[in-house]
Length: 422
Image (cartoon, rainbow, N blue to C red; front, top):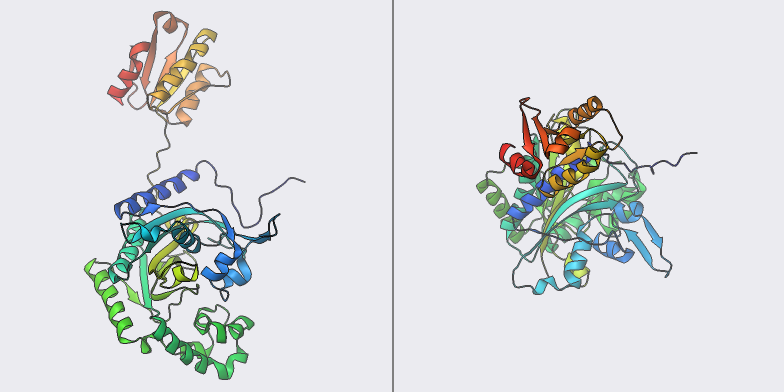
């Protein structure tokens, strides 16, 4: 029996991987504009990091983590998300002591969750995320959302909707928590087992339940907006003001609840409104997580960030029929005729590559006609022909495939000629 790829994973083949490279480069370019620096953390961490950082009551920790015991008896988990690992690194390397604050970081890499594979969701998936640590200024909340929107727009997406909410500070959340418990307690038996276990641990998570989303108590649940204290209200108003100043359209949704325990104050999602995108429209999610750094052993440090799936981004591009400007052609194809010319062509190909030209040649002893067909398939801009006669004269024939023009060029002048005409 042949060995096949594990369920929930995918091979990204040539022809498709170029799309990934393009959007990843766009992410790096946008982050550079906003002065966010790349960080790379391990693909696995101690399990305790995610239990403390993501939260024991989350579906991620309870159901979706790939956890195993290593040979030293330590519990290790493949990272299911990026924020906890970035914060762990921030604390471990004392980045809070750097003179330039806030600390602004981004990451791109694979994450792992054991969940049911479906359109746009995989067990190994790639996240792009940013984290800004060290500022309580609502302006940086707006900056983080602006960065996400700018990234999506830079790759050509137009049908986007930014949805925001405030989860309030600790005082506001505690008041809302008590109201939710009082609201759901009398009929909690009508809800799924997950919601029943969340009632006392984290009742806010009940509002995020997919199974019971249509229950009548969901529609009448207390809104966090009714429990925001003055500080939280002013903070949220400031965030909205900054978004308006940046000409970023948004919708306030009091029912927006992010699935991770560490969020407070600003929470947001970016949705795709492209027709036919699917039932799960969320492209990106994020929010403020004041308190997470302390939970992982660091000093009191506020933070905000987001994460998005590259897979879902590519699906949104397809739904909007966006074609990325991927360069598929090569610069030069060297056609060699005769053994001596074939031997010499190896040096010509290398010289062209060292000069910065994307260059290819035949390695299968094809006839001249087949070599030209290969050049056509590779969309070569120039075909360089070297035969026995050309070799004797120390020249090559250079054919411009777009115009059909052909020139005889000295081998020693080939690089200079191509730089001039390309």
